[in-house]
Length: 426
Ligand code: ADE
Image (cartoon, rainbow, N blue to C red; front, side):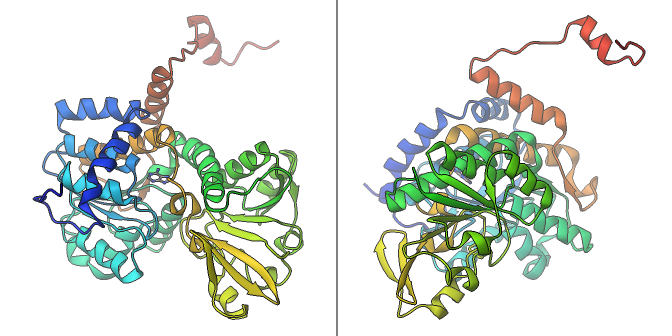
């Protein structure tokens, strides 16, 4: 039965709401840290009266974050942070069952994507919550009248934080933003274990390929790529890493991977996975050298890491969609495959990171929003990029361990004394 919700929205189909609600509840079971924060927020109402515009992947995990902010008193609007990452049943449930305005449809075109960002900004946020800095970028470029009301923002991902730091360095950032990505309980877990598992999940769901025995080329060796490389190796792939940073390249070598240039990797790879944050990491000069049947997928935030316009220009005829999320191009008679239109494959063809890891990422988001409000945001903070205080990061780690039923040691008084002195040696 379709309900008539009282909130504005643009979602695919409200009839999907019941199934979406079941899946949101399923994810909640794996999010004990966020649940603990939600229970506290219910009592303390730290976000009371705050208008929050969130631009995040619309998933079951995000739904649990939205509910936490709502319970904490926030007045929220949510739009998608990627045209292909929305789970339509979740979007429907948020509108129909939680009365949260949502603007997000899986597969929306660019024009709709930006009209949804506009709708989220029409909420006149006090707090922006971004994954990729599209809200902050749009406000600074075209909606500067909103700056007066804004207290501050939060940013989820590496790519967004890089952009914000560039804005701050140029003196362009007009309000403080907390880089959630920089918390240890975010990037050490979400980027590594979350991206590692969900990227392979997306590739496998899209292709049903066996990874064992295949050569998987991973572009980059940041936290995300490390996770991808380690999980691909765990499934029996021969992993090759490409890098531009000598330190990271050296780490990859000592972690046991073959390291080479993309030029050298192009003719030997079966599957190529990009997670660098930069453009044209796989380019025409690489496509020319790839084996027939080579598969390319991207796990970075934007769909710029594989030069798809370049591939289209050199390919014979239009690409064929041979399975959902698998497009076949023909280059000099050889088939080459692009997964999920080169958009982040873990959210396009799978469900993104599992809830257990998003639990910590979104605990950081909720605490970042609270921290920003408590501090008074731009009234008391310079327009810079901030990291959450270390004690909050540690608190999240401790809560996660507690929920997992794992106890750890504490320093004895003697050990504490030892660590704080400098006289004692051998
Ligand atoms: N980014 C990666 N995985 C995600 C998920 N499951 N939900 C929201 N954002 C994500």
